[in-house]
Amino acid sequence: MRRAVAAYLFPAPRRVALSNLAPHYFLNAFRDSHGLDLLFEGEERSLLDRRRPGEFAVIFVGLSYEPSYLNFARYLHLHGIPILKKDRSAGKFPRIIAGGVAASLNPRPLLDICDAVLCGEAEPMHGDLTALLDDPAAIRELVAGIGYAAKPGKKTTIIQASAGSFAVSSHPDLAKEGNEFGGRTVLEIDRGCVGNCFFCAARHLYGESREADRHRITHAAEGAFKRGEDIALLGTGLESVSYFDDLLDRAIAAGRTVSLSSVRIAGFTPERASRLAAAGVKTVTLAPESMVAATRTRIGKPLTDDALFAAFAIAKEHRFKVKLYLMAGLPGGDSVAEAQELIAFFTELKKRKLTVPLSLSVSPFCPKPGTPFHKKQLMPKKEYERFRSAAMRGIGELMPRMPVEWFSWRESLLQVAFDRMDAAQGAAFLAAYADGGDIRSAEKRSGIRLDDLSG
Ligand code: SF4
Image (tube, rainbow, N blue to C red; front, top):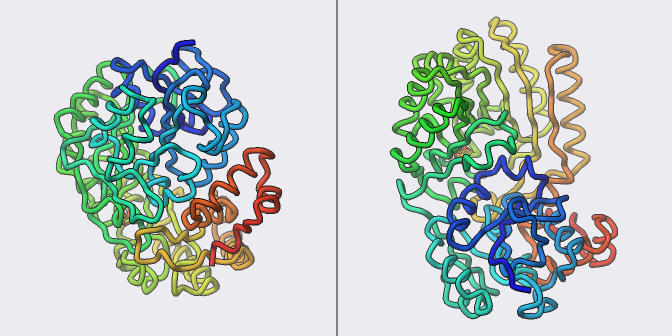
């Protein structure tokens, strides 16, 4: 059987996978040249050519979130592909090349599983990826010469696209598949960040803010408007992008609407809020991380309480809903005091008559590799639960109808554990998980306790 050359696997259900821009980038970059196709969790065959995973010579896998390693391991197992690279003989099984944010943060647990783990952003890899696809049989040898391919015992090099050299947006051919942005065309307009928060990998791994190519992004936005589609803008510091306001103005002129990943509070000015409202933005996401000013300063996000109240005043004036993102268990913080300050903030918000339709999302702080906080601890589960009960008691009295989302502590544990595993641990744990699909039995069978990696 002749092998189809390449597929890109994002180990999540199709709709979730296509809400990430990586499959769109790969389809755009390698469909015409190498017939690249897309694979999704829970589907037997590829999206376009209806091939089984084992028919491809190369499978790229995008691992942007550590818990998705579990789905990836299961996917290989369920499709009859051995999980360990030593068990995949040449020519019989696909070569597997991993990339993505999580894999770049700590490639080590994937080293005995994948034939290559490439760290960084895809655009500057294009020449090397083309060479690998041209000669899949030589992948292991070719990878040895790639500087940003992770190697055992060596410090990871992360390759970045230069400012203006990238412009990723939804592939128009995939529009009918839908996404988690209400079917909008998604445009990524910046990477890195102008902020300097000590917990955040965006800044510490991906550096200072870099804007996507203005011309290509504008062209993609105008294309979406012509097709009658609205747009969603993704990035880490949207409002600092030099052509952000211009994109909003274009959407307004075309009678289309915009949604945003989040806005930094410093850039949420009255003038910008008017533009956002005119562009149909209904919800703004604000991420102060903590309601304690001293904690915010300690984590490198020195926002004053006044700046926060000012943001709520602007949101109220323009009738925005606000999604508030907080972290529990930030280094040096005290959970009980943090929960009390959260309630005190909502109390003050009410007193100042600044309440708006509000939802709250809380996740446990995860120490990320490459950041100044990488050696800090994940808060114990019991403490997270204490924080949750204290916060919910106060919220229940003050704002009983406010939707509150508590991110799973267990998923945070998986993030921290995979961010700290070495090659042998990654191989043992994921091979055990692939077999049974159960975390506890994978811990037992591999002898690796996730809790032991979180301290
Ligand atoms: S948390 Fe937000 S503002 Fe801070 S560095 Fe990360 S992306 Fe930038």
